[in-house]
Length: 193
Image 1 (spheres, one colour):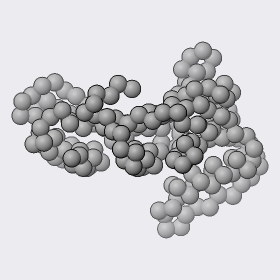
Image 2 (cartoon, one colour):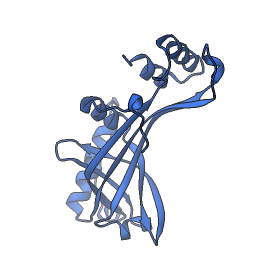
Image 3 (tube, one colour):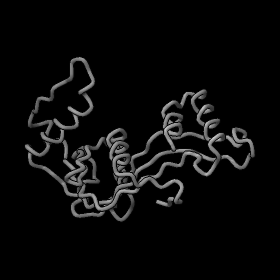
Image 4 (cartoon, helix red, strand yellow):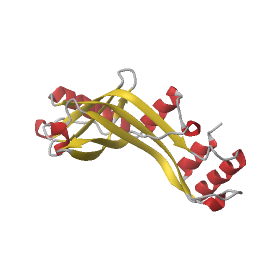
């Protein structure tokens, strides 16, 4: 990913926080000689340097995935930025946050591996509910998915949040975004030093 220095994030704690908070992404690989993407939730195992997820067994992507170098894109909040929001108008642009992760994929098919992935993903996304759903595993349902493990080789993080503008202009853009309903992006901009 192209990342000018002023948009580069290299603070590992911030990158980890972003990945955990934005765990729904796109897994991109080659299938039948072309590019193929699947949208899926992923579990980040920082210490093991892995991502875990699962896709439908009917999805052709898994059949060519084993050992393939893949790209995972985890998008964060994003929105259009009007040049009229700056005191010195320039051109329209887009503010956003994103992480790109590259690594080598492995397919997991053992029932205990699949149950672990489903249990961990469920725990992550159900934990804030008053009565979290607890998975039960039927063999026929587990056979309908294939687990994906990605051994992480590289993580790139980009926050394009008007850092090339003055603090006053950044504050104004954040207020405009907040007024337009994009609170998450406005908050991200306000957290910048």
